[in-house]
Image (tube, rainbow, N blue to C red; front, top):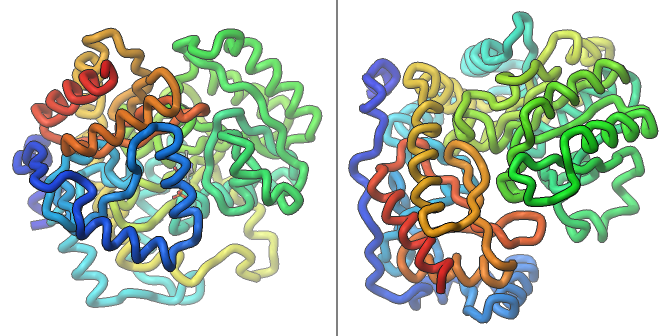
Length: 451
Ligand SMILES: Cc1ncc(COP(=O)(O)O)c(C=O)c1O
């Protein structure tokens, strides 16, 4: 079964079984409400606060549905409604939910060897996975550090930069998002609220530059200005790393002008800093290439997550041998590890995902289908940013975006808000989603945006 998918024609990967929405119980139905009530008692209190805040801003009830099962582009809630998922586990499920070929392989490895012994006694699955990841880097000799989450990969990259350069300064970008554990949180430029309560524990090593926007939605943030600013900030903080998303994801699917990454590469070279491409959202085909950054330049380190496991938790930081060499100078102590890093089932998932992505050149579909989806969304004059199957539809304000998502849910479409001001409806469907479903979704989004 697994071999069939890897070696089959690209069309074999396309989901032909997912169906349009079928909403028989207005969401959230009683079962979902019951589960929300239980969560409200035991989950951390932000569960309720978030819901109340969203209701306030949008004028719509924001009690969540509860997922019961999912397959392909469909999610089924606890009340039996069938939805078309335009979010896909925050962009992670690049081949749709629960692809049988992937689940079978992971289940096989899970039954055989759920956990090896990390960096002490690893498994062959880890060696295979790291070989495949190293081969994705545009230069030979790449090295790999595995993690579980995107934040883990970013942490590994920022630590690698300190070891490689001896410098702790970091330049990051306004609107950037790299995860919420402490190393990436310190570089989070999305909204002050993420950092504010923890500011005292975040250090003062990060400087934030403006992120240039090819669509010029933020007038004044032009390429040359952003580069000048990054250059000055790199000097100011004695940067050992510049960390950048090739396209800002949570920031609202903002595509920078061509030349931005190349400009950052030059700045890094001038200052002896590493260029870290955070491809956790853009990578693994989502934005129209296997890796978005390497089309323009060669970063020192690349972070991938989300699509790497296609629904299973694994991430990686990989890159130049020279950028990783510092890890060898620590007398053999494992100064960066975790119990579940490099677990055999996660490694097996990532290896198979890489094989299938590469054999099918699945990122090409994210260009063709993404362009068609974008055109359908733009049909009524909506502003749509992003690239491939990573699109942001701009609404009037955050309240409007929240209300549109909620009304879409009532029609059987799952979408999320994003953007610096929360005024973007973010759409990250599966790379193999059926086109007719995406066109139906585009119609629903344009209709709800106009209401
Ligand atoms: C660009 C980017 N980097 C890092 C992360 C963090 O990934 P995770 O939530 O898996 O820690 C995200 C998550 O959305 C992301 O979009």
